[in-house]
Image 1 (cartoon, rainbow, N blue to C red):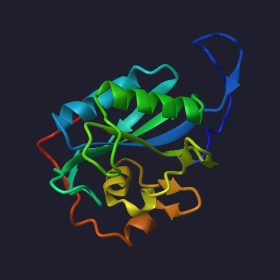
Image 2 (cartoon, helix red, strand yellow):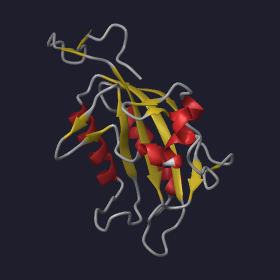
Image 3 (cartoon, rainbow, N blue to C red):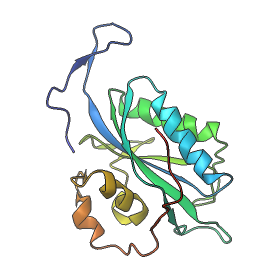
Length: 187
């Protein structure tokens, strides 16, 4: 995934004349507490309402077993969202965290059940590693629940420094990633 062919646009919302690159980003959403589908739909709707974010497409909904989860954790519903954005990566992260908070996400034990998880997987070909954000997502290449829905909507998906999602997924067990034909996220 790369920057757009014309990497700079006028910031039309503020008309400040500031120029920012358009980046395509991959966002993974998941929920295993409460009304899981409602939580995923809410995340998509909140992103859709975010200035400087345009949703390109959303994957089908998948049900997956929790990875390295606490005892008694329920199955997750997962989806992947492909967006175009002019937001900085840290502003996009702030928005993702705010969306999680709006849906009652409680941060606590690692891999604990959650109402909503909104993860930045890749943002263009941006690489970042600071105290608040690592891009690409440091474990995306190990997660079939990210790669399967991503490949459904972007056959050319690539994780910078790791390779094409289609090549990576060939090394993973995808048996626990089940497409839920009865569930749909609406744009």
